[in-house]
Length: 323
Image (cartoon, rainbow, N blue to C red; front, side):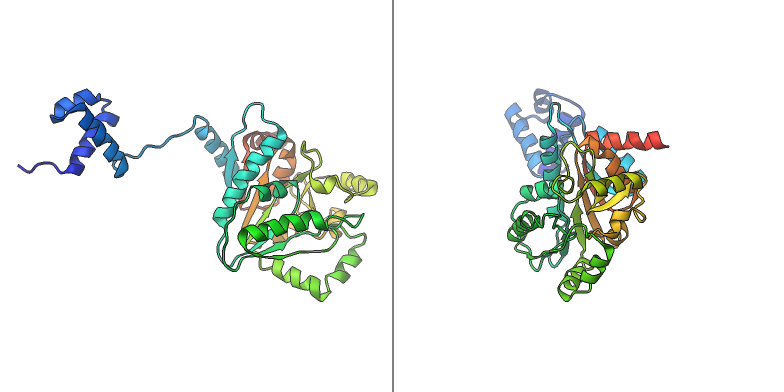
């Protein structure tokens, strides 16, 4: 009779320990070895892959169920980040932004053109990025940045230059206003050769990363706090029923955007333009962004979403209230 192989012995010891719940002493008696030998066998079974131990945090099934509900409803890949008790909004934002940064790094491929919007969430995400040099990467700014006071370039320039340095990528800025005063001014500038070059690069984007702006967010969106909108703009947005924005294109709660008047003057890509980009990563944190996030998902702007648990729950509750 053939003696069992070493692998067979390891498997049998592991089966008795992990499946039959036998003690090491009992296994030692059955196999005619010492208890210390059984301990080494179990260690070796783990090392060679016969035993694979998976640790599952208690909240993982809850988070996966929540992600699946969003996935089915909005057809996006979702990562839901647990909300820790006592976590401040700033801490929540950094946690979600860090998870978004890790996913963004995984999605990068050599030769890609990456489009980046700017704002509080993306700025926090960029702070969490790690060095990841990749050949022939290009980073292009997706929406204009200049406000009514003529500032904003330094804020966004610093953010994008950090990305370029970490990834050793070429960076292409978009030095135009966030909102023009007149739609005709935008159309005229769009005919300039230097601006057409950036618009052409935007059309080549294969991976976009952006947040969602909400008028009522606890951590205010940058565009709502630094001289980008005046009182007349706010009055018009209220009249038009807007609840937030993606890439500075305003949205209603139902995801509509075409007849919101300020969008005629915005320089960001519309949901229709974003939909042409193959991979689109949306990162959102904070329950008071839930309404704007729901609007963004109804507008089909994202293929991938990173969101905290509280915001995901609030967004789904608002959807059920609308139903």
